[in-house]
Length: 442
Ligand code: UD1
Image 1: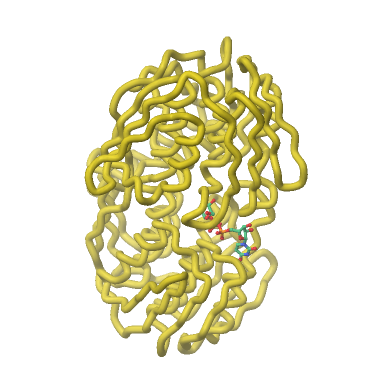
Image 2 (image 1 turned 90 degrees about the horizontal axis):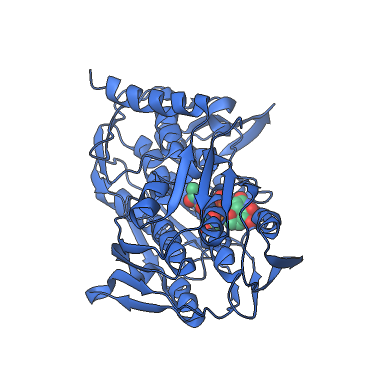
């Protein structure tokens, strides 16, 4: 296979305790946000996932000096020598999160010339909310072939109403607004925990940001933002995936790092299936003891604090063998059912009606060759493979690696039979990234 793949065998009930890394969706935007400062910042709990290496590359390209201590998960970023506001199409195409560089570049230079972003094909994923609202802040934007050119003399505060609480648009506007003249208000802002982690970071830098119910974020522009030291929040999506994997195999798992307060609706749905969830003092630490007779549950994805769309694919794998019929309504992305066809190949009974998947529980799934088209689909298919009879091979290893730092090792630690088979070029790529990270120190 050209891309690497994961080989999964039917596994015993997963059991044990497992640690989490920092959240991909928090660290990417936080690394991007460092361009608003000029100086040396330190980030802790940085996951070694491929998208993180891509964001590091992007900042290096702009002139930042970066050292990644991969053993300590510690990232040192010096933005003193940042000299460019241009990002090539090739770099931008590597991830969707690359678009998050725009807000910081506008805050720092009043300019950005960037290619169009790439990322998972889970829908159209336009960036109109980002661009429309930059324009409201005085930014003049035009397209030059496949580049976006943005220019502003002085960012001005604006009252911004988001028609949908887009995570990326909220983050980009917040970053730009930190240096705008006046107070920018974002109505119907995304308030995902990762957005709040970005706000925590910017606040440490000296930004003046308040969050009010129900979903209004106000950013008062300041003249100077200082470098910071920050620990990235835990990855709630990694936590959710591990809980689902344990539940699928009829196992029992404890995740001491997980804060239950940011997984409420997800945990509610696991309980409705029949699994027993115990939460530690002050909401920290989640223990799951699974039922041997899971019941079907229906759910609807939504912006935080709703059911996270990123946990929809793995949750669907779990619903495939629950007794009864579950309905999943996907409201965040219009095309996030690519994993359905692959689950059906494994024996699942699912049909799609518009943005709804109707899942009828089956006795068993069967291992076969499946293709993971995006990060969370790869999680779903690996989890299905843990319970399927026989061997499942999941190609699309690059997606798995983009989203997680060696999640297969955590699954193995809990007793899962899952191994990674690297494609030769991937082995070289990861080796190069780690080597380069170390080389920077010398
Ligand atoms: C982020 C997360 C992703 C998660 C998603 C929703 C990161 C790096 N990625 O993605 O894992 O699944 O939030 O929780 O943090 N939209 C528009 N116009 C825009 C922007 C968005 O129509 O300008 C639409 C999108 O097509 C999508 C919906 O809004 O249907 C939500 O997207 P958004 O919240 O922006 O997701 P991302 O920031 O891309």
